[in-house]
Image (cartoon, rainbow, N blue to C red):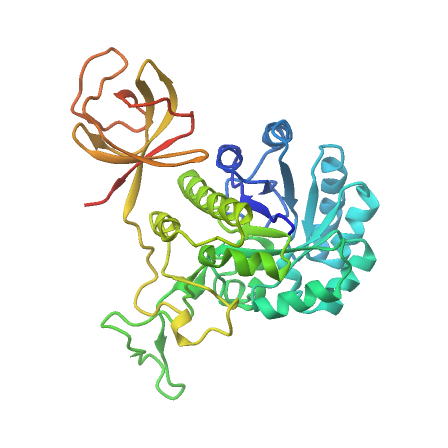
Length: 406
């Protein structure tokens, strides 16, 4: 049985480090150009070098996303970019366009190429065609069932890797190739600037009655007719492994480091649990509950178990479910006291959960808070404030304190 790679988003250097610390085998990042997540913090060259060093020193991989759908005006700059990244040591570069594939082969032939989900690979002939051109991996379209993936695996060369998204936001358009944003706002989603108009509320206009806006009722505020649920496949690890997917990809480069830590940790534990005892494996429902503690939309299994019906959409709201807040990050522990960098206000007497790299979360009632002068305080309420709390055991730097809302 092949061990699947757990591939996590790295929207910034901090998130890259968080993903690796919490168990990712590889991280995908975007530079300051040619990535499909303009809203992410992304990586200047100095941070790219630091991220590569951090990952490689721990035996992990880093993939660069350069998967925009380019126009003529992008070509010269992309060629210069390919030359600039060539010596940095990336483990692969993701592209979606055949021309950009050709540029990478010419300018950086030593870097493996992965074909982005934006290339809409939904069948074994297209996957095999990319392999013949020299691609090491194909990221499959999200609109595929497990049976379809299994057939692709059976019909392509063994050395062609298959990657698939298993968790995160889903785009209503086919493999994310959407024109809504470009048409409605002038922001091209295929060049990384999507305004997410699929998440907006819409009304109906009849062409002979301009100015008369009729509600498409789901509730009194209208409805959200393109608003897909989020993908979550944590309860189907055995099926994913058996389908032949090489790399399990988590979405979320614009999400928080807390999101990264929680999702990576949950999938890491469940993958390892299954691989450690496939015959005796039982899914731990607590891991699904763990994923419900990050900001998310209602979850679904996407296309994996069959074509989604009307239940695959969220009609009443485009808001996220957010039941927990990150309140602090552990920067060190000494003598039973943890040093905390505050992120949201918390009080003495609060009960928090501490998520930790490589371990299950720890529940703790905060009995005492002191500031940097040693004075006791009732509340940590300054952004980025350093405070100290007693803890029952050593906590790894990067452990995080979360508190239930309300």
